[in-house]
Image 1 (cartoon, rainbow, N blue to C red):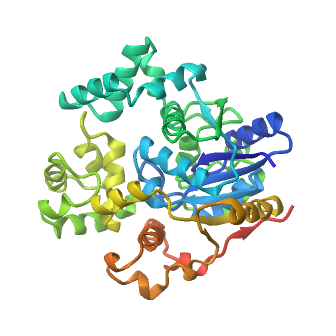
Image 2 (cartoon, rainbow, N blue to C red):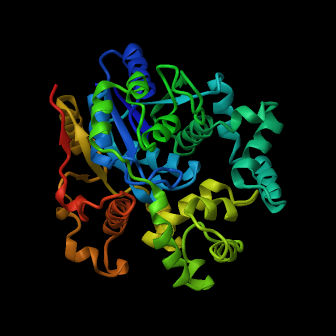
Image 3 (spheres, rainbow, N blue to C red):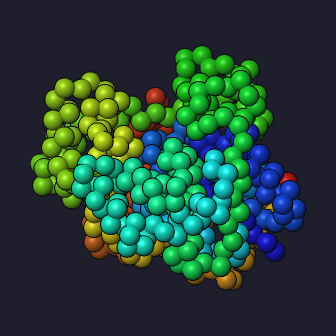
Length: 411
């Protein structure tokens, strides 16, 4: 069976995602589609508007056969780390022979060549020199590549193009047998706020959903019916702004040396954070105040869940060294059940359907150093789920990872 992997956030699952699945089906009519999806927080550090089981179910209803969770240790990271974690997870399943992803850049071979140049000595020297001058890593990378290849730097800066390049890069570095199938992105741009077309950006949809009275007629144009109905039942959505006070309390309780132990806080960023809390009144203000040319807004946004969960540099280094430690099942259909049997037979990673078999509530409260690497990684996912509950206007319950089972979607 041909199995095509897709790496996504589905925040929420909309008609643009459905279009991509249709394109995969058109190219490979008999293929099974397996999605690797971020969990409670997105790659940019924002709380997902629906929980991971709801979003995974929408994806299966929309055409995926199986949805697995990308561990927090990789999901809430830079594009490079997000892509590497997801590709390594796909590789560890033992059944995936293709990966499809959307991109704005309509020259996949050039992008693949750019990806293969990233780790060469010449490009790395240019990147390091630019970073020393005060550029962010992403800006330094796109500048070095565009200069070396004569490519338009603005095209390389597109969010989906950056991720696509990192997928190519990881596949090349690990000498993977998985074949890449880029799909030209269709519809409005990532940051476009318009909802006039049938395919709108997830940013525009989230913006509409956060209004006091969302325009459900407009949303019906851009969402599959199943997504539309699910979202109507779970309004208002979660929002990271509610983490402002917990974040302040945590910052006040820590000194600069303790802050430096958290992943992403270095090069004096701890001092900028401590200074920013003196003159801001919301999380959005704090992020804007702390961000700079060297520290992009997305990096500051990711620090919020990292700090509140206690994601340390040591834990991050361990995750990078060992890679994903498990494949956590969120939702599946009948064909997805066949994929699970294939993963059990051919994969190198344990499948998690019942979390208490791997980490108990008692073990959650132990010091991380007494846990196994798998348990430490899984513990971060559990903490992220509970942290996301604080982002909801009305908290329902904590400990959902112990109480929730994978969602089966019948044909």
